[in-house]
Length: 115
Image (cartoon, rainbow, N blue to C red):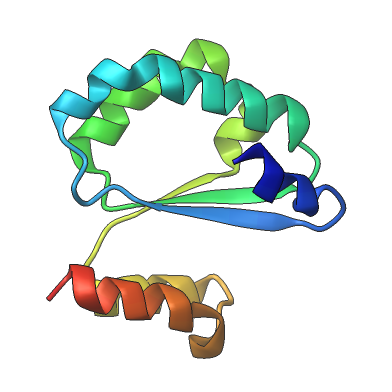
């Protein structure tokens, strides 16, 4: 992962995580999540514009409470939680200034996942 992200050291970028299939069994891997947050916060703090968490539900909210000691306010504010169907997500992204063209790769994947 570091190799791919190292190319993003000068340009602003976003990360979209679809948590639709996240289950409580994944919470056992919290140490990986904490390590990833620390990495993003230290190495990509200046270039990571936002993290979009799609369809995380109550599990993501519970995880946030657990992870708060590892997240500073600026990093926390960069996280955007979005819930909805494929169409609802499209409308929410458009309301944030995204175009359909910007969203084509995400929408194509969601079409498969949400069918």
